[in-house]
Length: 65
Image 1 (cartoon, rainbow, N blue to C red):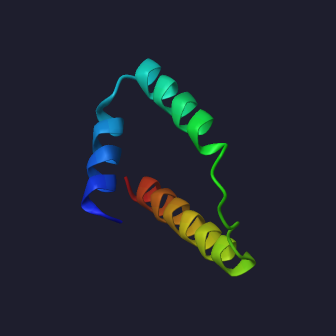
Image 2 (cartoon, rainbow, N blue to C red; image 1 turned 120 degrees about the vertical axis):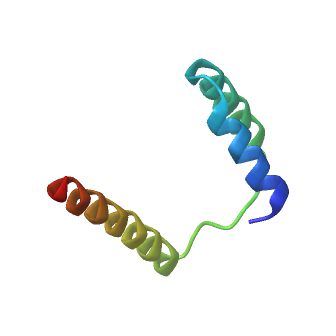
């Protein structure tokens, strides 16, 4: 991830919820016209695995709290 994208995401994270919703709506409106490749099955599996590992880690931490 480039530094400028990371800065954008950091700024987004600091927005109030209402402004986050506004930003998401605008970004989705703008990207509708982009042509991009869909992720491969392998990429989707890896992403899902990352999410499940994160959730498992959180559950384990909650059990020990």
